[in-house]
Image (cartoon, rainbow, N blue to C red; front, side):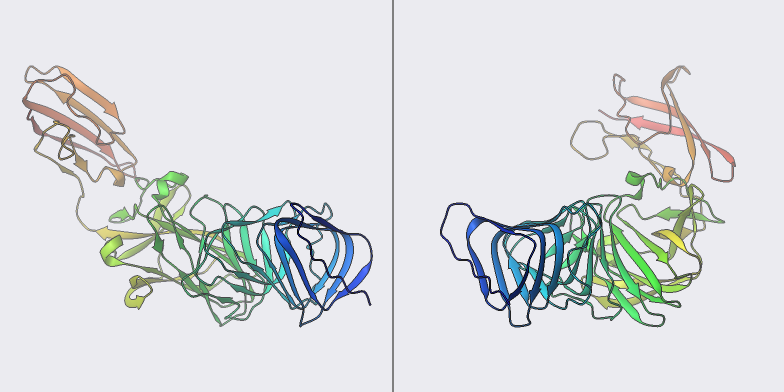
Length: 408
């Protein structure tokens, strides 16, 4: 047995562990903020009563860590092994704690932490796909996955714990919270984030053992290419422009009941759920809305998934009447109110063409795919005639005509 104990007060210290076996039974305190612990081929064993405090970064190049104690670090964790070595032995049951401000899990190889605890006072970030084989404790911290996967492989339903912490997948169209699931058990996906923060979690009960992933994208789905105007159905479907979710069967699961929580005051009222498939939004089917209280939410949309793969889902409001509404006038005076010629409901059509004429029948404005952005530039105050042509997802064309008054 070798006991490693390091204390120092140098401005910068790099501790390199060569190829040897050491059993750590002590407090290894790298006490300077610039310290770096480099693990280069070492075989390390820590007992349950071990505390390793690294006041700086940890860099793993190669080796084997059988970790049963607690390792806390103030800097970043990096796995730069080139042979898919996930750093920690499968038999490890210890904990790694990120305990200060912004900290990152870096490198180009996945690290399989036994337990990971996010602590301190700021965001933690994933720069690489990451695994937790036992428990992920978010505490009150935001975990920003930044386009990467956070995978909790422990199938215990309480393998993720939190107070107010959450997983943020909204900073990138990719990146997921992934969980290994057991058939019939209920799993929470604490998802939140975005520029205007929302907490919109997912709950899933799978009918099969397997792996399920979830995303919450806190912005218009059109930003990721899922255009809301590409909506098809028996009736007109208004797709939620505030956020959408993606639930993916990574492996094994072909049937699952999921629940998406939302807030009717902040998000609006909805009576349906839509799925983006074959390049347009369809009624998702197999859903029901229910009033349910939650953390910042008061309703939940329940949905049954009956196929593998990714399910791109958005709350929708299905109405039986034509949603086209054209304002009778507008006042382009840059006061932020009624500055543009507004046509409501265009997002429900796959195509539109707008033409505006003066009283002598001369075209003064024309455009395809009108975006409610015409302010009557260069025109005098007066009444103008518009002709609006719209085409729905089934190819049905309609012409809407009328007058609009420009007031200056």
